[in-house]
Length: 431
Ligand code: SF4
Ligand code: SF4
Image 1 (cartoon, rainbow, N blue to C red):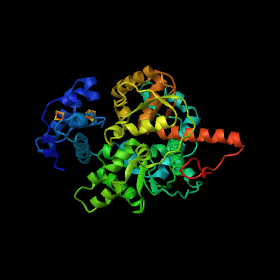
Image 2: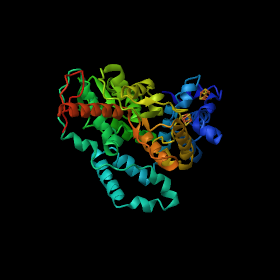
Image 3: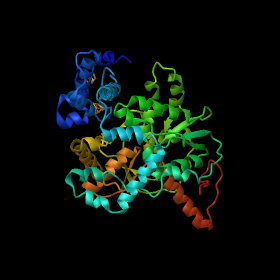
Image 4: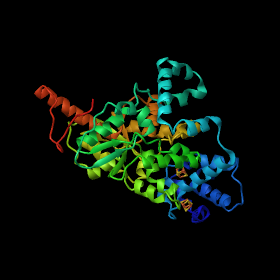
């Protein structure tokens, strides 16, 4: 992509002002796409070196892509912002903490597992209560959910493979699912197997590289993308994932390798990537479970709704679980999580979070569903702080719960868990 040319396509119409959550809150040009695009053009044409103002401008963005949805010129704001962050990183480097995290922690699942253990020990020792006494850390600390006993990857070694017959599916394991929400990974695999697919978890894969791309560490991001691409063999039909942000990043790998020898390889990978909700709705014959009968409201993650154009499928899964969907106002408005935006811009993030929680509260729902673990963490913290602690699920968890509930009922009726013929239902084979 020629970034100066892309930026030149902006008509300066200002339509992006009406939809940018940050501009709506702060009313400053640096927050809106138009200001970012203008600055990109100036920098790309060599009239200005990226400095402090550029850094503040390009990091004041949620990558929510609301601007891209409305933009009449279809300016790819997301790519321009990422390119400018890359330039800023190349010129000034990063802080020690970010360098350690992005270069030496998140690319390595085994080191993330050590981080999970440390965080669990920190919570078990009751330290969060102490940390929350410090006003500057209170909000940030609240974002961390209860850390589970085991990671999802650890469970894989004791799990038998279901032969399936409907096709081979690779499962991309997001870092957050792995160390914070293993129940989602379990639900994904259970549901795929119940639907008759042969599932290959990508144990050789690594993080999707969104954190690296978000902070301009593009060289590292490319190495990680290649590791993921090589972790999937050609005979795999689909690469499913349960994280909206990971999914959008995996689909955008070809952009990373544009014009290089790896572009075709990346395209072959990306064309098979699909979100679990979209996959189940489009390609699976999903059996019926037992109706859960709970009232659920759904938050549209920006990276699922706009980056992947997936809106109805998660709602279909919620309905399929026998839950009642109650739509919240502005379900597609960013919750303010946006990766680490809630840590780097806590005040702005909280403003958006409060709006989201107000919308959830107004529905009277008993639970929230969303297809992004980062949104889940953010909304979960918001519910605890501004409302009450109602549960949050991935839509696929609701489906797995409805199957498990049916299994329980059938177990009660017959005195044992029945094996049901393929295509009709539950066929439990994990340990
Ligand atoms: S909506 Fe698009 S064309 Fe209009 S000002 Fe914003 S970025 Fe430029
Ligand atoms: S991506 Fe979202 S936060 Fe960033 S400029 Fe566009 S609308 Fe604003």
